[in-house]
Amino acid sequence: MKKAEGQQCRYGLALGLLWSVGFMAGGVPKLAEARARREAERPLGINVWVYNYAHVPRNNLAEAERVSGAILAKAGIQISWVHCPAPACEQPPSPTVLTVVVLPQSMADLFQVGGDVFGFAIASTDGRPSSRAEIFYDRVEALTGQLGYSAGSTLGSIIAHELGHVLLETGGHALTGIMRARWSYEDLVAAASGLLRFTPQQAERMRTGVRKRAESQAGDSE
Image 1 (tube, rainbow, N blue to C red):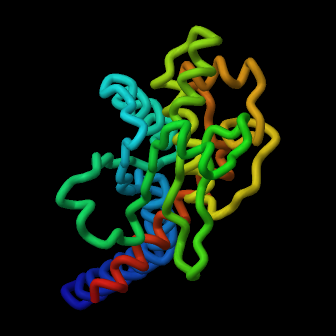
Image 2: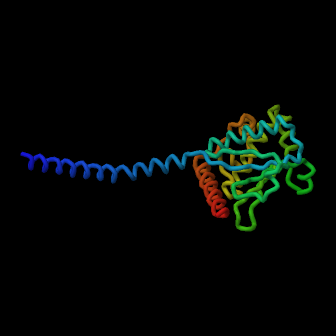
Image 3: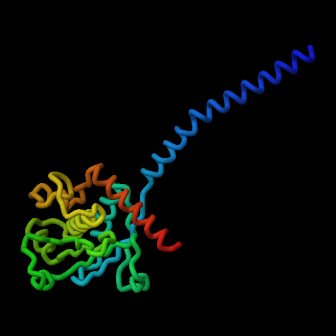
C-alpha cells in the first residue's frame, strides 16, 4: 500500500507538472499578446515647443493647446507643451521634441505663401525625423472672425493637422478627417469645435513614429 501510494503521489506530481507546462505553453503567447496589445494602446508622449511670434492671446493659445492635445490624445499620443523661450528650449531638441512656430501675417508675406494656406510642416533634409510646423495665426483669426467661431479652437485643429504631417512623415493628405488638404465649411465648423479626428490607420502610423523617435533618443543617450 505504501508503495502504491508513493506511485500515485509521483504520478499525481507528474500530471501536475505536465499540466503546468501545458498551461504555460498556451498561456505565455496569450500573455505576451495581451502585453503587446496593452503596450500598443498605451498613450505615448511627445514634447512640443511653442514659439508664439504672432503674440496669440494667452487664452486663445491655451484653448488651441487644449484642443490640439485632445485630438492627438484620441490618437493615443499625449502632448507636453513648453512655451519658448524657456530653459528647456535652450537645449538641442531631441527626437521626441516637435516645434510649433506661430507666425504673424508679415511672415506669410515674406514667405510668399498663398492666402488660403494656414500653416505647413517642414520636411527634414538630413535624414532625421521631421520636427517643425509653422502656423499663420492672423489668417486663422481672420477666418474665424468671419465665421463667428473661436480662433483658439480652430488654431488647435490646425496645429493638430500640421503635427500630423510631422508625425506621419508625409506631406500627403487624406480624403476625410483632419488630414484633408482643404476644409469645407462643415470641416471648419468641426475644427472650431475640435471634432476633426485622425483615422485609426493614421493614429497607428503616428504612434509607430513616436515609438521610433523614443528608441532613437534612447540610443543617442547610451
